[in-house]
Every structure is written in C-alpha cells, then in structure tokens.
Length: 488
Image 1 (cartoon, rainbow, N blue to C red):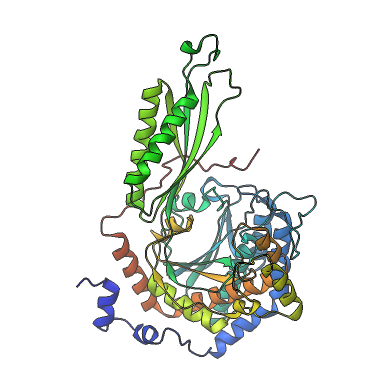
Image 2 (tube, helix red, strand yellow; image 1 turned 90 degrees about the vertical axis):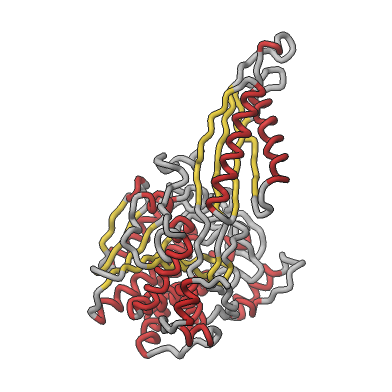
C-alpha cells in the first residue's frame, strides 16, 4: 500500500493537524484577537471597495497597468510597507514588504483587465461607453483584497511585536503575459515559507486543487512568394507548411494522453489568393495536467512543425511565448485556509443586491442556481489532477508551498471572462466577496505566523510532491517578459 509522507506523519502522530482532519467540516470559534482583526477589516470595506472600483474603471491591460499598480502601491506605502518597483524586468510589477526574519508569508495581487470586455455594472449586457476593456476575471478585486489582507497582517505583527515578514507581490499580466513566472525565475520567492492567494469566482471554496500545465507557442513559416497562376512552380507556400503542420498535429490527437488539450489559431495566412504566401503564422496552446508529460508532447509538436517545413520546402521558426507549470496542491495549507474560510462565512445579499443577482441569474436559463448559493462554503476536496484552465500561480507552487481559495464576488452561476462577471465586479456584490477573501487570507496568514508545524508540514508536502531531484526550469528560458503583448 502506497503512503504519502503527510499520511505517514499523521499515522505516526508527528503532526498536530489530526483533529482538524477528523473534523474538517467544523471550524473552531474565532478568538478575541481574530474577531478584532475581522472587525477592523470590515470597518475598512467601504475604503477598499472604492479602491477596487477605481481599478475596475481603469481596466488596464497586462503590462500596461500603470495607474492600477500605483494605486495599490500607494495604499501599501501609506501603511509602512517598503516597495521595490519594476521587479523582474516588468515596470508594473512590485514587491511590498513589512517586518524582518522568518517566517516569510507571501500574498499575490493581480490587477490586469481583459480586452473587449467593457460592461456597465448592470444586470443586462450593456457596453460601458468610452471603454473597451473590462475586469472580466475580477483582478481589481483580487489585487485590492490581497492588499487589504497584507495591511491587516502587518498591523497584527506590529501590535504583537512578533518576528516575521509579510510580503505582497504585485503580479502583472496574468491574462496571457505570465508575470509570475518571471518573478519566480528572478528568485523573488526563494526565501518565502508559504504563499496564500485567491481568485474571484461565483462560489466560496478553499481546496487542494491542481490546474493544467500549459505553453503558448507561435510557429512562423517562411516560403517564397510568386504569382499563383503565372508561376506557381516558383513559389513555396508558407500556408502549405501550416496546413501540413496542423494536419499532423490533428492526427497526433489519437496518440496523446486523453487529458491533453491542443488548440490553435492561424494568425496570418497570406494576403491574397493569387499570391503564394511567403509568410504564415499559427499560434498554439498545449496543455496537460503534468508538466513532464507536457514537455514530451511539446517535443512531438515541434518535430511535426519541422517535418511540415521539410515536406513543403519552407522554413519554420518556433517560439514559446509563455508557459505555466501545473499547480502543486498543498493539502496542509489548503486545509488551514478552508478552516478560516468557514470561520469567515460566505456572502449575504441586501434586497437590492438580491434583485441584481436575480437579473443576472435569468441570463443562465439552464442553471439551477439561486442568490443564496453565495452564502455557502463548498466542502474541502483534494484534486491532484488538474483540469480546466492554467495559471502562472503554478510556477510559484513548485518552489513555495502554495494554497488558494475562491470567494463569491460574482453572482452564482457566473463564469469568468463574461460580461456578467464584469457587471457584478463593479457592484457591492463584488466588494462583499472581496472582503470575504481579505478576511480569510488575513486569518490564514496570522495562523501561519503562530503555527510553525503547519509550515513544516506544508514544506514536507511540497518536497514529496515535486520529487527529490527537482530543479525549477522556466518554460520560456531566458527570454524577457512580453511587455508589448497587449499593444496593438
């Protein structure tokens, strides 16, 4: 019978976590100090709601979040944090620190928006005038909640005169720019003992859940232009190269692990049908739950591109634009976060908020959801095999024990990257969910400063999960951050 290191520790009585495991659905009562921390955060909810709404209105795209990052940095500076700006070669990235010594507890803050997602804060689809972008993934709430939690933890550390460091990482361009991977590559997490983070959602959840490892690649084919009717024999079609390449990859789908996801889009296929195209480009995203399996699949895709170029007498250039590891779930950290989320509770609506939610829910006719679902806390689960999407948090989780949660900042049933997400994120519903996250992160961080045994268990889990010979290798190598990827 196989037994994980963490399970062995439990059986041998080497951890004080056993009672929590036996009663994982029962959260202990809040202490007086925890209640005071939560009350202080609640008293500032209007302030943080205003800050988040200012970022919602700005809706700045990846690596162009100039005003958004300054708003968050100003809030941290006002509360005594030391700020290092422009880290890891990214002008809108920053690291804010308070305290000294161990342990070092890190929080993550995102603040980039999505293009083409402008939406008013209404329960019906209506584009916001004068704006093209929108916070359809709720990163205005993400960054603000993390800042609020960092400030609360800082004040708790100072009041109790305790050693340790709380550190907030301002991480730009999560939406396709992969800001965090460049921060990991730069060694900015090397001395961190644990990272706790969150993401907006339509439900409240803290589980040990993985994700898909992913790479985004561009394949550029070069041929020779010629008149397609008068002298076709003198041309070599770059588009032929892409079509041959895509055909071979589509045949490959039968012979890769079933969890693999491969999607592509031809970005440039030529200018006119009577010209043999000298240049063509196709973009690929390749995903798999396991990073090592993904690397092997990438190698096969690259060989298919080389074969397509050989067969069509063209030339191909390949570049990895961005690449993410799968998240390594950390059960001890996640269980602690789940317990703290239970203590905080979910989101309750006022009559006005309920009316807004009902309007949004009417746009989901196939779903059986109701406004009260925002109050619920999902059961704790362990999901070591990832599915769905990918995130640059994955890279962090391979070098630092990492746990994440979701809070109901959106109306139940809402998916990310939708107008419904943008709409709710611009209302008090978004603010309430944001404060659930800020409170949960704060309680989790405070517990980690007080419970070194949880940090030890979390580190042991990480070491076992990634294996004894692991060395972090950034999937994009030494190429610089793609700072212009959102610029037209």
